[in-house]
Image 1: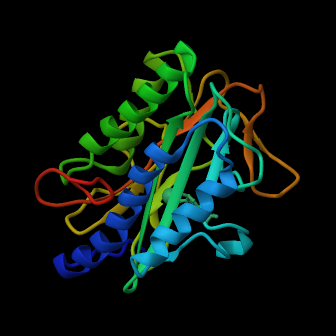
Image 2: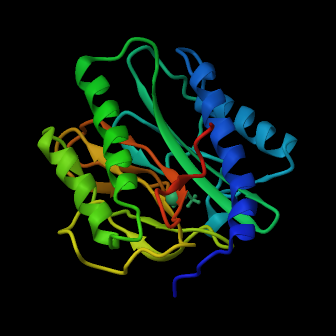
Length: 249
Ligand code: MF3
Ligand code: CO
């Protein structure tokens, strides 16, 4: 069941989402060679709590950390550790915040020092694909119009979209209906309606789209060892263009 939000509820969600945006923005300046992913988690959690929020992922289905940090061939759900980032790495930071009854969810993938041209292109194309999807998030379209816009952009650039994980509705729960796949033909699935709030989150692999899960039960990695990137925004559907709730204005 898709839960539509009133403008007042969307305003409340905007609070959670603004904190997500602030944490991700702060991470852009914090991530550098020598920093551990645990350092990132500590800093993010402090910032979330200082703003009165709660880190939404901690304890979610038993997830053991406050944020997800996924390095290089890790796709999503990487668990922060004492491993230090090094020059040339890429690291996806995924942050969820709960405050005042509502959730916000967002992610960016950041370069660590100097990265390869391939890694740079992967980050650029994945973020562009997210915005191609957001462009389709209007009441004139259906869910799979978002999906196909993402897939087309990714494949036109020679990369592949992960199938095993999808975007999602979000609101009073972290995950609500509908699912938002990052692949598919256009014109399918539910019609988008004013008041829908969804998290769009393309995961893009440099080589094949297949993923597997490490023995920790969480970390998704590429099967072929290729690089992977992930960008996510929580957005609200209006009668015009979507509002990007996790974007700092
Ligand atoms: N952005 C991811 C999602 O929507 C993060 C969830 S991590 C988890 O599912 F630990 F909470 F599962
Ligand atoms: Co999400």
